[in-house]
Image 1: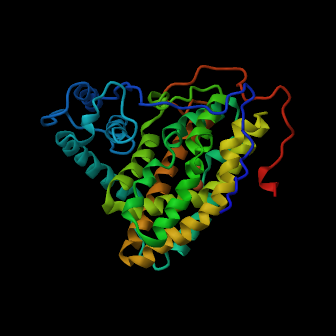
Image 2: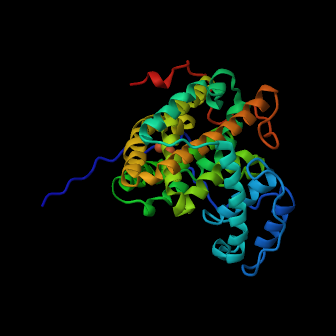
Image 3: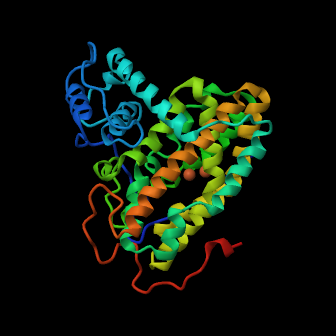
Length: 375
Ligand SMILES: [Fe+2]
Ligand SMILES: [Fe+2]
């Protein structure tokens, strides 16, 4: 029997010699945003058990700060948890009953935002037509490429951090709920998201690296207090889809459109960073996605979404709903961000401290080169 040693990739090392940037966990305890989150955080500081008697949020279930943080915190118990909060809360029946009411209100609002979900025959064609419409929509990445300064690129990274520092985790919950071709397709995509088993290549890890090079704290949850309701709701949307088997079709539709939309967005953000003189380490997260998602977009639209609907045509409407819900919440978040920037305001709940230059900016700005031109 002969054995072959696989050629190993050259070790990637940061300029300061470290091979990876680890973003730890659990999430720090955030500041409450109203009576509901004040009561919830108080409740979570105690021991699990009993009925939840705290007030429910009174603001909008998607764009209200109190409502969005409450649901986000309930889901955080399923990820890395919250500092000082007993792990037993994750499956506490009293808390789950309260979360179910938050979810009912959240889904009702998302349905309003999405509007009528069309009867979809060919789901792959439907997803491609949704993606084709993106060219006319307002775009944070295009704005960054054309007008973005250091402050905007830093704010953009902070806004994405609740999603990207646990990138892929919510969709992974759908794996045991699928079988056959769509399951294999999802595993293929997720294996890349998790760096094919190499810690420093995990996409969440690459995003932490980008944050560090932008002069931002890369620790998990470090900027939660700065991120507004609509962005948190975008994360809760996919947590809800991933955590409920009933919504497995929506989880698939969400991921499919996400992957299809990704390559041009990632290329544009990389170009924006390059224009500001950021080095290859800062851009690695984006450049990696330009390549990886060019493949994922096909797998997601055809084998994953198309394969699932072929197995069970009754799920077509849920797959479409997942994609449309992603679009609806992204559009809201985009409007909020660009309205703020165009008015000369911060898109965060509080502006970041000003810095003149970030660690990832090279002394001499490199000439602009469009990464989409690379072969
Ligand atoms: Fe990724
Ligand atoms: Fe991907």
